[in-house]
Length: 62
View 1: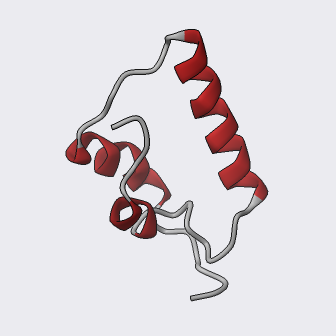
View 2: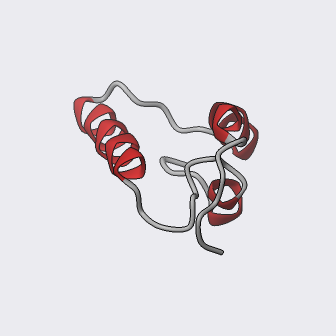
């Protein structure tokens, strides 16, 4: 898919309980890569792996 599924997003560190400036930057960067044709579709595993580096982020809201 072009975007991670909600369950993958929920388990990444980008999900801090609100739409942060980091989330917005990630979204805009991804959208721009898609627009330019530089992005590729990702499997669930590829999304899980690419977002895994952010998992240790603390959630502020649940």
